[in-house]
Amino acid sequence: MLNKTLNAKLLWMQFEDVLAPRLGLTVWDRAVYSYLLRHSLVVGKLRLHFAVMSVARDLGLSNGPVRQAVRRLDELGALRLLERSKTGHLVEMRLPEQIRALRPGRNGASKAAEEPPASNLETTDFLKTWALRKTIHDRERGACFYCLRRTPANVQCLDHVVPRARFGRNSYRNLVSCCLECNTRKGDRPARDFLRTVYRLGRLTPAELDGRLRALQALAAGKLRPLLPSV
Ligand SMILES: [Zn+2]
Image (cartoon, rainbow, N blue to C red; front, side, top):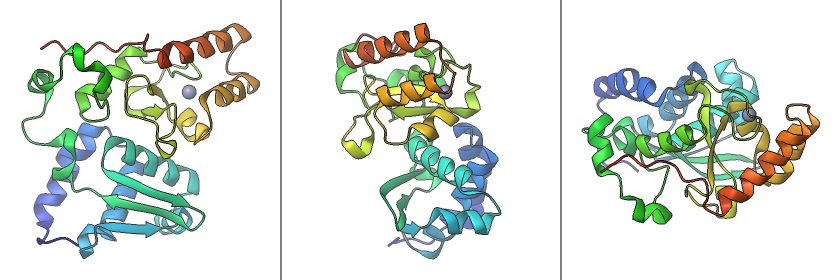
């Protein structure tokens, strides 16, 4: 339960002026975040259990975009996905002011100074801040790690190669930048299997598949290091 009253005006302004533009939310992300917030924090509940189908029906969307939005909001830290089962999703919502990447004073250059030095690379949580997440996107140079398609910044996702549900970490060895479609299709499947599916769909040539499988090994071996902002 929340122990303070929400300031609706402030919340609305933070959502429209800070959260949506800074996190690069799509219209679907925005609709889903607003909807979930309305049924959780706005009525004093921290957590919300919901079925994707009902949210989709209420928002006039199909299930896919709602599922993708929930996944993206979780990745961006706007909510925390606690459980996913046949009966639905259990999430813990975050107000804009609680989203780590959006806290006051954390923008652009000032953020770079807070990043850990390269010696901490192995213990760094790369989902922690916007600047750290960007280093993973930059490492992939705007291409999806799985299908190699060029991916505009507003639809780039970070994907856990070993899913978080299976204790995958937020390490640079376990996070890749990918397109929304691959992020959704992969789900909790092992990355190697997923790459073979992408190949079967004709999105990768045999040589590219080979290259991607090797990249996966290099990633796990710590050879694909992102460039941390200088301190
Ligand atoms: Zn892709």
